[in-house]
Image (tube, rainbow over all chains, first blue to last red; front, side):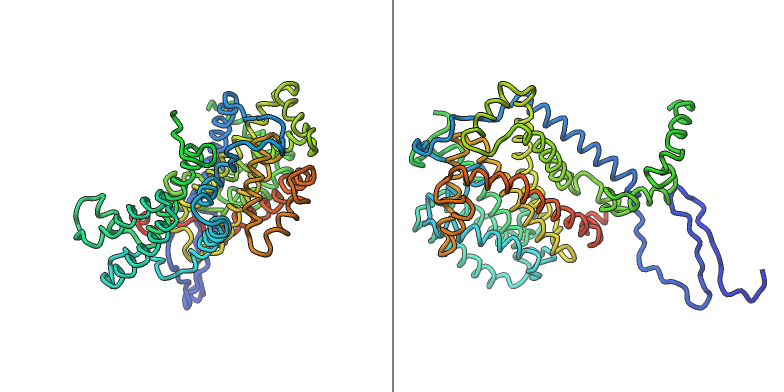
Length: 232
Length: 248
C-alpha cells in the first residue's frame, strides 16, 4: 500500500458473533464509540425460541385446566328474579365492596376515575424517578406531612365505618413510618422497608387494598351484602 | 443430530421454495438472523438484538408475552365460539346449552375461552405491577406505560362485555350491577348507560351491543394498541434494565 492512503480498512472475522462489516476509519476524524453493549444477543433465535416455549407452556396449562374446570352456567336470565346478592365479575368486586361503604358518587365514580388518573400520571411525576428512600432527606417535615395525610384518610374511612380499609391503611402506614425511627443497617427485612420510596408505598398500599377488598367482596359477602364466613 | 439428518434439514431450508417464502437464506449467519427479524412482517416488532439481561426470567416473568398469547388464544377460541352463537335472547342461552350437550368439544372450547379471559385479566394486572416495581415506566418509557394503562382498561372492558353473552342469571345480574354504577356519573351517567344498553333496561339490544363491542370494536382497538405498545418498546430502546442488574 502506498504511504499517502487516507484510511484503514478492517473486516470482522467472527461471523457467528458479529455481522460481517467493513470499517473505514479515516485518520483525521475517527468515529467515537460512546458505549459498548457487550451482552447483546440476536433476537433470532434467542427471543423467538423463548417466546415459543412460553406459548407452548401456556397452552398446555390452559388445556389441562379447561379439561377439568367447567365454565359456570346458571338459569336463563330473568329480570324478575333478582339473586341475593347480585355480584359483579370478580375484578369489579373491590369496587362493589367500596359501594357498600361510601356513597355511590365516591365509590362508583370518584375513586375509579382517581385510580385511572393516578396510574396514567405515574411516569410524569419526576419527583421520585430515582426511587429515593422516603426518609432520606428532609425527614421531619416529610414525617409531619405523611402522618397528617394518613390521619385525614383514616378519619375519612372511620366516618364511613370502612374498617377493613381503615385497618389495612393503618398497618401499612405504620410500617412506612417505622422506617423513620429504625436506624440504617439493621436486619435485611427492616432495611428493605426502610429503603422504599414513596411511590413504592403508595402502589403497595393500592395493590394490597385492592386484593383485600376483592377477596372480601368475593368470599365474605352474602345476602344483602352482609358479612358471611365462606366456610359456614 | 446425525449428519444425514442435518444435511436433509439443510437441503430443506436452502432451496428456491424456502427462499421465496422467507426472502432469505437459512439463518446461520448474523446477517441472515437480522433479516429473519426485520424482514418478517410478524417478527419485525422485535428488535434485531436484545440485551441478554432482559431475557432473564426474573426480568419480565414473560408477563407481557403471556398477556399477548392469552389474547391470541382468546381470539382463536372466540372466533370458533362465534360459529355456534346467536346474539339474541333467549337463543344465546340455548347456544350455551348446545355447546355443553350437542357440539363436540363445545364445553371444552367455552372453558378454554373463559379460563383464558380470567387469566388475561390477572396477567395484565400482574404485568403492570411488575413493570411498576422494576421502574419500567421511567423515561423514555412514559407514554408506553400510558398505552399499557389503556390496554388494561380495554382488557377489563372486553372481559366485562363478554360476561353478558351467555345470557344466564349470572351474566344478567353482574351486568346490571356494573351498569348501575355508570348511572351514578353526574349528568353523563344516564345517557352513557342508555347508549351502552340501547335502552333503559338490559335486554336484546344490550346483548347485541355487547356482542358487537366484544367481538369487533374492542378487539380491533386492542390489536392496534398492542401493536403500538410493542413498537414503542423497540423505539424506546428495549426493556428496562435496572442499575442493580447492570452490576450482576
